[in-house]
Image (cartoon, rainbow, N blue to C red; front, top):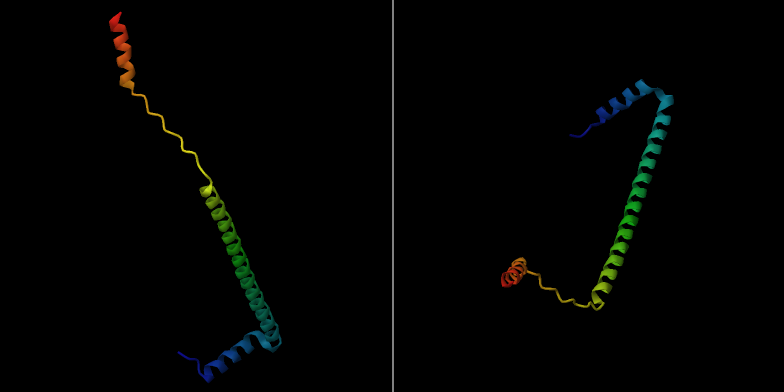
Length: 100
């Protein structure tokens, strides 16, 4: 749905009647300032986000480089001790008391 010529003229006349011819330039100036501030904030937000992404990528690369350095270092393997069975300890105690 498109606004035709007469609809636009009607809107302009209503705005002139409601606000008067003296206040319209001030309203437009305030509107332009608001739009400029909005654009500036969007640009700062995008710049801040890209800086945060770059810092995150740099930190990720640091962690990755540190983890590969740890993986490359030689690691000594320690032999695991065999667990002592509880039943075997009880049997030896019983046998020693039975012989006496």
